Image 1 (cartoon, rainbow, N blue to C red):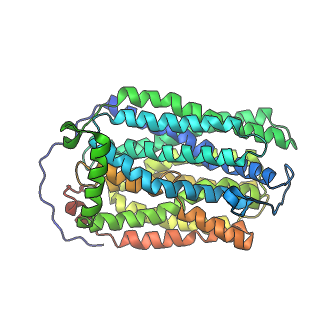
Image 2: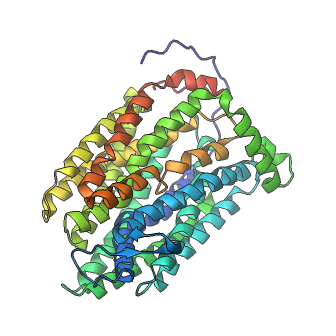
Image 3: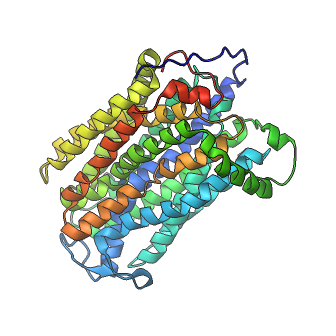
Length: 462
Protein backbone atom coordinates (compact mmCIF):
# COMPACT_ATOMS: atom_id res chain seq x y z
CA UNK A 1 0.00 0.00 0.00
CA UNK A 2 1.48 3.35 -1.01
CA UNK A 3 2.14 5.86 1.74
CA UNK A 4 2.21 9.61 1.15
CA UNK A 5 2.85 10.94 4.66
CA UNK A 6 6.34 12.31 5.25
CA UNK A 7 7.16 12.26 8.95
CA UNK A 8 8.89 15.09 10.66
CA UNK A 9 12.52 14.55 11.53
CA UNK A 10 12.95 13.48 15.14
CA UNK A 11 16.35 14.14 16.69
CA UNK A 12 15.42 12.51 19.98
CA UNK A 13 18.11 9.94 20.83
CA UNK A 14 17.15 6.30 21.00
CA UNK A 15 16.41 4.97 24.49
CA UNK A 16 19.62 4.05 26.29
CA UNK A 17 19.92 0.41 27.30
CA UNK A 18 22.84 -1.87 28.00
CA UNK A 19 23.52 -5.28 26.51
CA UNK A 20 23.09 -6.79 29.99
CA UNK A 21 19.68 -5.18 30.33
CA UNK A 22 18.51 -6.40 26.93
CA UNK A 23 19.78 -9.88 27.77
CA UNK A 24 17.78 -9.78 31.00
CA UNK A 25 14.69 -8.84 29.00
CA UNK A 26 15.29 -11.73 26.61
CA UNK A 27 15.55 -14.14 29.52
CA UNK A 28 12.00 -13.50 30.70
CA UNK A 29 10.88 -14.93 27.35
CA UNK A 30 13.15 -17.92 28.07
CA UNK A 31 11.48 -18.30 31.49
CA UNK A 32 7.82 -17.90 30.57
CA UNK A 33 7.98 -19.87 27.32
CA UNK A 34 8.12 -23.04 29.39
CA UNK A 35 4.50 -22.39 30.36
CA UNK A 36 3.51 -21.54 26.81
CA UNK A 37 5.15 -24.63 25.34
CA UNK A 38 5.14 -27.43 27.89
CA UNK A 39 1.82 -26.50 29.51
CA UNK A 40 -0.40 -24.83 26.90
CA UNK A 41 0.89 -26.35 23.69
CA UNK A 42 1.67 -29.94 24.70
CA UNK A 43 0.52 -31.32 28.01
CA UNK A 44 -2.36 -29.43 29.56
CA UNK A 45 -4.97 -29.92 26.83
CA UNK A 46 -4.69 -33.73 26.71
CA UNK A 47 -4.08 -33.95 30.48
CA UNK A 48 -7.08 -31.90 31.55
CA UNK A 49 -9.27 -33.48 28.86
CA UNK A 50 -8.39 -36.93 30.26
CA UNK A 51 -9.14 -35.81 33.82
CA UNK A 52 -12.45 -34.34 32.61
CA UNK A 53 -13.34 -37.58 30.83
CA UNK A 54 -12.73 -39.47 34.06
CA UNK A 55 -15.10 -37.08 35.82
CA UNK A 56 -17.62 -37.75 33.03
CA UNK A 57 -17.52 -41.47 33.76
CA UNK A 58 -15.22 -42.55 30.93
CA UNK A 59 -12.60 -45.23 31.37
CA UNK A 60 -8.96 -44.19 31.38
CA UNK A 61 -7.51 -44.72 27.91
CA UNK A 62 -10.88 -45.02 26.13
CA UNK A 63 -10.59 -43.97 22.47
CA UNK A 64 -14.06 -42.44 22.33
CA UNK A 65 -16.32 -41.03 25.00
CA UNK A 66 -19.44 -38.93 24.68
CA UNK A 67 -19.60 -38.05 28.36
CA UNK A 68 -20.48 -34.70 29.90
CA UNK A 69 -19.49 -32.79 33.01
CA UNK A 70 -21.56 -30.14 34.78
CA UNK A 71 -19.38 -27.29 36.14
CA UNK A 72 -21.68 -24.82 37.93
CA UNK A 73 -24.60 -26.87 36.63
CA UNK A 74 -23.75 -26.19 32.96
CA UNK A 75 -23.71 -29.19 30.62
CA UNK A 76 -20.34 -29.35 28.86
CA UNK A 77 -18.96 -32.07 26.58
CA UNK A 78 -15.76 -33.45 28.08
CA UNK A 79 -13.88 -32.70 24.85
CA UNK A 80 -15.02 -29.05 24.93
CA UNK A 81 -14.09 -28.34 28.56
CA UNK A 82 -10.51 -27.20 27.91
CA UNK A 83 -11.32 -24.90 24.95
CA UNK A 84 -14.11 -23.34 27.01
CA UNK A 85 -11.69 -22.81 29.91
CA UNK A 86 -9.28 -20.99 27.62
CA UNK A 87 -12.10 -18.72 26.46
CA UNK A 88 -13.27 -18.03 30.02
CA UNK A 89 -9.77 -17.19 31.26
CA UNK A 90 -9.28 -14.77 28.38
CA UNK A 91 -12.68 -13.18 28.93
CA UNK A 92 -11.47 -12.34 32.43
CA UNK A 93 -8.14 -10.98 31.11
CA UNK A 94 -10.06 -8.51 28.93
CA UNK A 95 -10.81 -6.66 32.16
CA UNK A 96 -7.63 -7.42 34.08
CA UNK A 97 -4.79 -6.78 31.64
CA UNK A 98 -5.49 -3.14 30.67
CA UNK A 99 -5.68 -2.36 34.40
CA UNK A 100 -2.32 -4.10 34.95
CA UNK A 101 -0.86 -2.07 32.08
CA UNK A 102 -2.18 1.21 33.45
CA UNK A 103 -0.71 0.45 36.88
CA UNK A 104 2.62 -0.46 35.26
CA UNK A 105 2.73 2.90 33.47
CA UNK A 106 2.22 4.74 36.77
CA UNK A 107 4.59 2.56 38.80
CA UNK A 108 8.26 3.28 39.40
CA UNK A 109 8.71 -0.42 40.24
CA UNK A 110 7.60 -2.39 37.20
CA UNK A 111 9.97 -5.21 38.09
CA UNK A 112 7.93 -5.87 41.24
CA UNK A 113 4.79 -6.19 39.12
CA UNK A 114 6.65 -8.58 36.81
CA UNK A 115 7.76 -10.65 39.80
CA UNK A 116 4.24 -10.83 41.28
CA UNK A 117 2.68 -11.99 38.00
CA UNK A 118 5.42 -14.53 37.31
CA UNK A 119 5.45 -16.11 40.76
CA UNK A 120 1.65 -16.28 41.04
CA UNK A 121 1.46 -17.95 37.62
CA UNK A 122 4.33 -20.31 38.38
CA UNK A 123 2.77 -21.21 41.75
CA UNK A 124 -0.58 -22.07 40.15
CA UNK A 125 1.24 -24.19 37.55
CA UNK A 126 3.11 -26.12 40.24
CA UNK A 127 -0.28 -26.58 41.97
CA UNK A 128 -1.29 -28.90 39.10
CA UNK A 129 0.54 -31.54 41.12
CA UNK A 130 -2.69 -31.91 43.11
CA UNK A 131 -4.96 -32.41 40.07
CA UNK A 132 -5.41 -36.13 40.47
CA UNK A 133 -8.30 -38.51 39.81
CA UNK A 134 -11.32 -36.61 38.52
CA UNK A 135 -10.44 -33.16 39.95
CA UNK A 136 -11.17 -31.34 36.72
CA UNK A 137 -12.59 -28.30 38.54
CA UNK A 138 -9.35 -27.79 40.49
CA UNK A 139 -7.37 -28.15 37.28
CA UNK A 140 -9.58 -25.61 35.55
CA UNK A 141 -9.28 -23.09 38.40
CA UNK A 142 -5.48 -23.40 38.57
CA UNK A 143 -5.21 -23.04 34.82
CA UNK A 144 -7.26 -19.84 34.83
CA UNK A 145 -5.13 -18.30 37.59
CA UNK A 146 -1.93 -19.29 35.80
CA UNK A 147 -3.11 -18.08 32.39
CA UNK A 148 -4.29 -14.70 33.68
CA UNK A 149 -1.04 -14.22 35.62
CA UNK A 150 0.88 -15.25 32.51
CA UNK A 151 -0.89 -12.57 30.48
CA UNK A 152 -0.29 -9.95 33.18
CA UNK A 153 3.42 -10.78 33.21
CA UNK A 154 3.65 -10.45 29.43
CA UNK A 155 1.96 -7.02 29.57
CA UNK A 156 4.60 -5.72 31.98
CA UNK A 157 7.39 -7.46 30.07
CA UNK A 158 6.31 -6.04 26.70
CA UNK A 159 6.06 -2.52 28.14
CA UNK A 160 9.86 -2.53 28.55
CA UNK A 161 10.40 -2.95 24.76
CA UNK A 162 10.06 0.73 23.67
CA UNK A 163 12.61 1.63 26.35
CA UNK A 164 15.23 -0.81 25.08
CA UNK A 165 15.76 0.53 21.57
CA UNK A 166 14.82 3.08 18.92
CA UNK A 167 12.38 2.55 16.01
CA UNK A 168 14.95 0.82 13.80
CA UNK A 169 16.15 -1.51 16.56
CA UNK A 170 12.92 -2.93 17.95
CA UNK A 171 12.23 -5.54 15.26
CA UNK A 172 15.62 -7.09 15.98
CA UNK A 173 15.26 -6.86 19.78
CA UNK A 174 11.77 -8.35 19.68
CA UNK A 175 12.84 -11.14 17.32
CA UNK A 176 15.81 -12.08 19.51
CA UNK A 177 13.53 -12.22 22.56
CA UNK A 178 11.07 -14.52 20.80
CA UNK A 179 13.93 -16.66 19.44
CA UNK A 180 15.48 -17.15 22.89
CA UNK A 181 12.03 -17.91 24.28
CA UNK A 182 11.53 -20.70 21.79
CA UNK A 183 14.99 -22.03 22.58
CA UNK A 184 14.25 -22.10 26.33
CA UNK A 185 10.82 -23.61 25.87
CA UNK A 186 12.30 -26.19 23.53
CA UNK A 187 15.04 -27.14 25.97
CA UNK A 188 12.59 -27.90 28.78
CA UNK A 189 10.38 -29.76 26.34
CA UNK A 190 13.38 -31.86 25.30
CA UNK A 191 14.00 -32.75 28.94
CA UNK A 192 10.36 -33.76 29.31
CA UNK A 193 10.63 -35.81 26.13
CA UNK A 194 13.51 -37.74 27.63
CA UNK A 195 11.52 -38.30 30.84
CA UNK A 196 8.43 -39.52 28.98
CA UNK A 197 10.53 -41.81 26.76
CA UNK A 198 12.49 -43.34 29.63
CA UNK A 199 9.73 -43.59 32.24
CA UNK A 200 6.64 -44.20 30.13
CA UNK A 201 5.12 -47.65 29.65
CA UNK A 202 3.18 -48.71 26.57
CA UNK A 203 -0.47 -49.13 27.47
CA UNK A 204 -0.02 -47.76 31.00
CA UNK A 205 -2.38 -44.79 30.77
CA UNK A 206 -2.05 -43.88 34.43
CA UNK A 207 1.73 -43.58 34.06
CA UNK A 208 1.23 -41.35 31.00
CA UNK A 209 -1.14 -39.12 32.97
CA UNK A 210 1.30 -38.88 35.89
CA UNK A 211 4.20 -37.98 33.59
CA UNK A 212 2.09 -35.26 31.99
CA UNK A 213 1.28 -33.86 35.43
CA UNK A 214 4.95 -33.73 36.46
CA UNK A 215 5.92 -32.16 33.13
CA UNK A 216 3.41 -29.38 33.78
CA UNK A 217 4.85 -28.87 37.27
CA UNK A 218 8.38 -28.66 35.82
CA UNK A 219 7.29 -25.71 33.69
CA UNK A 220 6.15 -23.82 36.78
CA UNK A 221 9.50 -24.41 38.48
CA UNK A 222 11.39 -23.34 35.33
CA UNK A 223 9.28 -20.17 35.02
CA UNK A 224 9.95 -19.16 38.63
CA UNK A 225 13.68 -19.89 38.66
CA UNK A 226 14.63 -18.15 35.40
CA UNK A 227 12.49 -15.10 36.20
CA UNK A 228 15.20 -14.25 38.75
CA UNK A 229 17.54 -13.25 35.89
CA UNK A 230 15.43 -10.42 34.41
CA UNK A 231 14.54 -9.28 37.91
CA UNK A 232 18.24 -8.78 38.53
CA UNK A 233 19.41 -7.44 35.15
CA UNK A 234 16.55 -5.22 34.01
CA UNK A 235 16.56 -1.57 35.06
CA UNK A 236 13.56 0.53 35.95
CA UNK A 237 12.61 3.16 33.35
CA UNK A 238 9.86 5.11 35.13
CA UNK A 239 7.69 7.32 32.94
CA UNK A 240 7.16 10.99 33.72
CA UNK A 241 3.84 10.06 35.35
CA UNK A 242 5.58 7.51 37.57
CA UNK A 243 8.29 9.99 38.57
CA UNK A 244 5.58 12.46 39.60
CA UNK A 245 4.67 10.13 42.48
CA UNK A 246 1.22 9.24 43.74
CA UNK A 247 -0.51 5.92 44.22
CA UNK A 248 0.10 3.76 41.10
CA UNK A 249 -3.06 1.69 41.66
CA UNK A 250 -5.59 4.53 42.02
CA UNK A 251 -3.73 6.71 39.53
CA UNK A 252 -3.57 3.77 37.14
CA UNK A 253 -7.35 3.33 37.25
CA UNK A 254 -7.85 7.03 36.56
CA UNK A 255 -5.31 6.95 33.72
CA UNK A 256 -7.04 3.94 32.18
CA UNK A 257 -10.32 5.83 32.27
CA UNK A 258 -8.74 8.79 30.48
CA UNK A 259 -7.13 6.51 27.91
CA UNK A 260 -10.44 4.79 27.16
CA UNK A 261 -12.01 8.20 26.60
CA UNK A 262 -9.13 9.47 24.48
CA UNK A 263 -8.29 6.31 22.56
CA UNK A 264 -10.54 7.36 19.69
CA UNK A 265 -7.87 9.98 18.91
CA UNK A 266 -5.73 7.09 17.57
CA UNK A 267 -8.11 5.27 15.20
CA UNK A 268 -5.31 3.76 13.12
CA UNK A 269 -3.69 2.22 16.20
CA UNK A 270 -7.07 0.75 17.09
CA UNK A 271 -7.48 -0.57 13.56
CA UNK A 272 -4.11 -2.33 13.73
CA UNK A 273 -5.04 -3.72 17.15
CA UNK A 274 -8.29 -5.08 15.70
CA UNK A 275 -6.39 -6.80 12.89
CA UNK A 276 -3.93 -8.28 15.39
CA UNK A 277 -6.66 -9.50 17.72
CA UNK A 278 -8.28 -11.35 14.83
CA UNK A 279 -5.30 -13.06 13.20
CA UNK A 280 -3.37 -13.72 16.41
CA UNK A 281 -6.47 -15.29 17.95
CA UNK A 282 -6.20 -17.86 15.19
CA UNK A 283 -2.48 -18.38 15.83
CA UNK A 284 -2.99 -18.83 19.56
CA UNK A 285 -5.85 -21.27 19.04
CA UNK A 286 -3.68 -23.44 16.81
CA UNK A 287 -0.95 -23.43 19.48
CA UNK A 288 -3.33 -24.17 22.36
CA UNK A 289 -5.32 -26.94 20.67
CA UNK A 290 -2.70 -28.64 18.49
CA UNK A 291 -2.05 -31.39 21.02
CA UNK A 292 -5.75 -32.04 21.56
CA UNK A 293 -6.23 -32.27 17.78
CA UNK A 294 -3.29 -34.66 17.50
CA UNK A 295 -4.43 -37.00 20.27
CA UNK A 296 -8.20 -36.95 19.80
CA UNK A 297 -8.57 -36.66 16.00
CA UNK A 298 -5.30 -37.99 14.57
CA UNK A 299 -4.81 -40.65 17.29
CA UNK A 300 -1.13 -39.82 17.71
CA UNK A 301 0.86 -40.82 20.77
CA UNK A 302 2.22 -38.39 23.34
CA UNK A 303 5.81 -38.96 22.25
CA UNK A 304 4.94 -38.01 18.65
CA UNK A 305 3.32 -34.81 19.84
CA UNK A 306 6.30 -33.86 21.99
CA UNK A 307 8.79 -34.54 19.18
CA UNK A 308 6.70 -32.42 16.80
CA UNK A 309 6.34 -29.51 19.21
CA UNK A 310 10.06 -29.77 19.95
CA UNK A 311 10.67 -29.50 16.21
CA UNK A 312 8.39 -26.45 16.13
CA UNK A 313 10.31 -24.82 18.99
CA UNK A 314 13.77 -25.12 17.49
CA UNK A 315 12.64 -24.19 13.98
CA UNK A 316 10.76 -21.23 15.47
CA UNK A 317 14.07 -20.07 16.96
CA UNK A 318 15.54 -19.88 13.47
CA UNK A 319 12.26 -18.71 11.93
CA UNK A 320 12.04 -15.71 14.26
CA UNK A 321 15.55 -14.64 13.32
CA UNK A 322 14.92 -15.37 9.62
CA UNK A 323 11.72 -13.32 9.43
CA UNK A 324 13.41 -10.63 11.53
CA UNK A 325 16.14 -10.45 8.87
CA UNK A 326 13.48 -10.35 6.12
CA UNK A 327 11.71 -7.51 7.95
CA UNK A 328 14.97 -5.56 7.96
CA UNK A 329 14.93 -5.73 4.14
CA UNK A 330 11.23 -5.33 3.26
CA UNK A 331 9.67 -4.11 6.52
CA UNK A 332 7.79 -5.75 9.39
CA UNK A 333 4.31 -4.96 8.01
CA UNK A 334 4.90 -6.75 4.69
CA UNK A 335 6.61 -9.66 6.45
CA UNK A 336 3.66 -10.22 8.77
CA UNK A 337 1.27 -10.18 5.79
CA UNK A 338 3.36 -12.87 4.09
CA UNK A 339 3.30 -14.97 7.27
CA UNK A 340 -0.52 -14.83 7.38
CA UNK A 341 -0.70 -16.30 3.88
CA UNK A 342 1.52 -19.13 5.09
CA UNK A 343 -0.68 -19.65 8.17
CA UNK A 344 -3.70 -20.12 5.92
CA UNK A 345 -1.81 -22.87 4.12
CA UNK A 346 -0.99 -24.49 7.46
CA UNK A 347 -4.69 -24.74 8.42
CA UNK A 348 -5.61 -26.26 5.06
CA UNK A 349 -2.75 -28.75 5.40
CA UNK A 350 -3.78 -29.70 8.96
CA UNK A 351 -7.34 -30.42 7.80
CA UNK A 352 -6.08 -32.96 5.26
CA UNK A 353 -3.68 -34.77 7.60
CA UNK A 354 -4.30 -38.54 7.75
CA UNK A 355 -4.92 -40.19 11.13
CA UNK A 356 -2.19 -42.27 12.80
CA UNK A 357 0.50 -40.84 10.51
CA UNK A 358 3.28 -39.18 12.54
CA UNK A 359 5.51 -38.02 9.64
CA UNK A 360 2.97 -35.70 7.90
CA UNK A 361 2.12 -34.22 11.31
CA UNK A 362 5.81 -33.50 11.92
CA UNK A 363 6.21 -31.92 8.47
CA UNK A 364 3.30 -29.62 9.23
CA UNK A 365 4.91 -28.80 12.57
CA UNK A 366 8.07 -27.76 10.75
CA UNK A 367 6.05 -25.39 8.58
CA UNK A 368 4.42 -23.89 11.68
CA UNK A 369 7.82 -23.38 13.28
CA UNK A 370 9.14 -21.36 10.37
CA UNK A 371 6.33 -18.79 10.50
CA UNK A 372 5.32 -18.86 14.17
CA UNK A 373 8.02 -16.87 15.94
CA UNK A 374 8.47 -14.24 13.25
CA UNK A 375 4.80 -13.41 12.86
CA UNK A 376 4.44 -12.87 16.61
CA UNK A 377 7.73 -11.07 17.24
CA UNK A 378 7.22 -8.62 14.37
CA UNK A 379 3.62 -7.94 15.37
CA UNK A 380 4.86 -6.99 18.85
CA UNK A 381 7.58 -4.64 17.59
CA UNK A 382 5.25 -3.14 14.98
CA UNK A 383 2.68 -2.36 17.66
CA UNK A 384 5.35 -0.67 19.78
CA UNK A 385 5.62 1.95 17.03
CA UNK A 386 1.89 2.75 17.33
CA UNK A 387 1.76 3.45 21.09
CA UNK A 388 1.69 7.05 22.38
CA UNK A 389 4.72 7.71 24.60
CA UNK A 390 4.20 6.91 28.29
CA UNK A 391 1.27 4.55 27.74
CA UNK A 392 3.13 1.39 26.78
CA UNK A 393 1.70 -0.72 29.60
CA UNK A 394 -1.90 0.22 28.91
CA UNK A 395 -1.71 -0.38 25.19
CA UNK A 396 0.11 -3.66 25.63
CA UNK A 397 -2.66 -4.57 28.08
CA UNK A 398 -5.13 -4.32 25.20
CA UNK A 399 -2.67 -6.06 22.90
CA UNK A 400 -2.22 -9.00 25.28
CA UNK A 401 -5.94 -9.81 25.11
CA UNK A 402 -5.00 -11.99 22.15
CA UNK A 403 -1.33 -12.66 22.73
CA UNK A 404 0.50 -15.68 24.14
CA UNK A 405 -2.07 -18.21 25.24
CA UNK A 406 -4.86 -15.69 25.72
CA UNK A 407 -7.02 -16.13 22.64
CA UNK A 408 -10.72 -16.62 23.26
CA UNK A 409 -12.78 -16.33 20.08
CA UNK A 410 -10.84 -19.13 18.38
CA UNK A 411 -11.18 -21.69 21.20
CA UNK A 412 -14.82 -20.68 21.64
CA UNK A 413 -15.53 -21.25 17.94
CA UNK A 414 -13.58 -24.50 17.99
CA UNK A 415 -15.41 -25.74 21.10
CA UNK A 416 -18.87 -24.84 19.77
CA UNK A 417 -18.23 -26.42 16.37
CA UNK A 418 -16.94 -29.60 18.03
CA UNK A 419 -19.96 -29.81 20.32
CA UNK A 420 -22.29 -29.41 17.30
CA UNK A 421 -20.45 -31.74 14.91
CA UNK A 422 -18.31 -33.96 17.18
CA UNK A 423 -15.52 -33.38 14.62
CA UNK A 424 -12.17 -31.78 15.44
CA UNK A 425 -11.45 -31.39 11.71
CA UNK A 426 -14.51 -29.22 11.16
CA UNK A 427 -13.58 -27.26 14.27
CA UNK A 428 -10.14 -26.64 12.81
CA UNK A 429 -11.53 -25.33 9.52
CA UNK A 430 -13.52 -22.73 11.46
CA UNK A 431 -10.19 -21.05 12.28
CA UNK A 432 -9.55 -20.12 8.63
CA UNK A 433 -11.73 -17.05 8.95
CA UNK A 434 -9.38 -15.57 11.58
CA UNK A 435 -6.41 -15.62 9.19
CA UNK A 436 -8.31 -14.42 6.12
CA UNK A 437 -10.09 -11.57 7.89
CA UNK A 438 -6.96 -10.66 9.86
CA UNK A 439 -4.94 -10.45 6.64
CA UNK A 440 -7.48 -8.16 4.99
CA UNK A 441 -7.68 -5.90 8.05
CA UNK A 442 -3.89 -5.63 8.36
CA UNK A 443 -3.57 -4.97 4.63
CA UNK A 444 -5.92 -1.99 5.05
CA UNK A 445 -3.79 -0.32 7.77
CA UNK A 446 -1.79 2.68 6.46
CA UNK A 447 1.05 1.75 8.76
CA UNK A 448 3.39 4.72 8.24
CA UNK A 449 0.57 7.20 8.73
CA UNK A 450 -0.52 5.29 11.85
CA UNK A 451 2.96 5.58 13.40
CA UNK A 452 3.13 9.31 12.72
CA UNK A 453 -0.40 9.80 14.09
CA UNK A 454 0.72 8.19 17.38
CA UNK A 455 3.47 10.82 17.67
CA UNK A 456 6.33 8.47 16.79
CA UNK A 457 9.02 8.37 14.10
CA UNK A 458 8.63 5.47 11.63
CA UNK A 459 11.58 3.14 11.00
CA UNK A 460 13.32 3.55 7.66
CA UNK A 461 11.73 0.40 6.23
CA UNK A 462 8.13 -0.70 6.85
